[in-house]
Length: 561
Image (cartoon, rainbow, N blue to C red; front, top):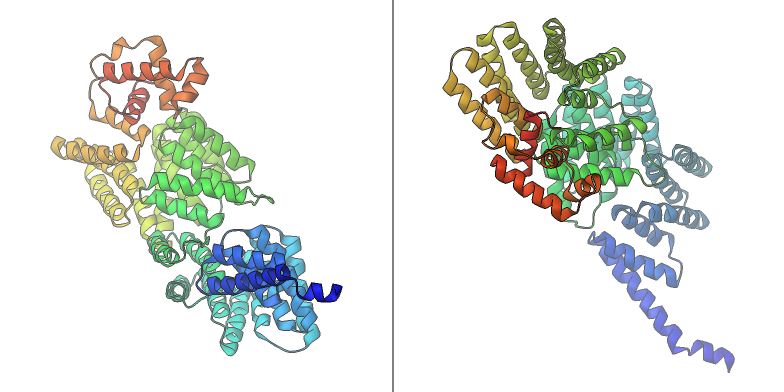
């Protein structure tokens, strides 16, 4: 009777049916690439009764693609052991590889290397060559690149691609060919390398690859584009991939360093709020245990955006965070000191940074800052030397971004040297390239220098139009320090009522200019938020201002920061 009661238990039968239904729906969600739904349903089925290894693979993949890395790395070992128990060495080794892939990307090198060794041992014990052997070549190629042996990396990636082709594995072919492209770029064969990256990205955007590899390929390709300063191509592939991702709302392909690169692209194209969001997301993501080294780059990107918007305290703090996590804070920190009027400190910092930088690609951005700082310090010869070196690097690498940077540097030096006509031509070239690259802030800065050249040649109307165009861009972006410099250049008098600010209003205005919120100003000065708001209203009225950005510009102009 007891045994019969167990077999006839309707509750047990109901639970079994619910588990089967969750499993069926979870598999369907996985096929539809509804990753969060698949993770939830497969997890529910797994709680009722442990999943079979193939379904554990699905669950681990869905969790990873939904951004739940910790859950995913807990599942891969179960799938691995499940396949081992069935005698399926190839599938077990594949699970070990994907676990190692996630661990290595997360900065857990020792544990990731251990799982790679496990995958190799499993395959060696099986004694039969399979496609996973090709996947296990990929970390070897990456190590070769890291050690500076790009030629060996190229050979390794080609061997992996051949195995991918032999076994009909498009994921492996894509991973290997994009690795070969990165290696060719390091060897100086930029055209061939970029052609391979483009070929791989076509496969990505056409949906030919599994979602598991798309995010990694995307991040690496964008990184390769940044290496050669091909920001136009980086932007193009970012837009293409964004369209692909839009069809999978649950997908989380951007992690850590990818978010930093996206923030850089968004900043270049004038989407500063979106860039700040991405940089902040990168800081949050990379701070997850174990903290990843790329967090320094994320903080540096946040610092740059704060600096450009005149939020000096926030910029200072973010540069310090970047330095704490191993990212050198130059040239941004030197430019921050320049914005603060500390020219000697800026000059010392940028020259120290240049003294440590050896590789041409790493010197370019430092040299651009060096030109600006040297001219502020009255060192025209130093600015000329930096501009000439930039021109040489730009000629060697032949990237539009570098050509624009070099032209801007050469133009401002020519202007200081007194050759306004040559400066005008060079600066118009820089402005044109920046517009082609859809880089509004850099184009506006170039137009300010064009205005200086026009004025030096007696063309006041031309200067006024250039300054007006630049002002509109700076106002839209909230580039307070640049707006303040425009006030000086435009030679406009201070607004009526400038002398009627009270001491407290001057304090409030100075704090607004550092980017503080009303709440933060209230805390600093020991006031209520309501009182701060009243002071701001009085300031806007007395100075005929309409926004915090305009107030910040006024504060910089009158040295109230």
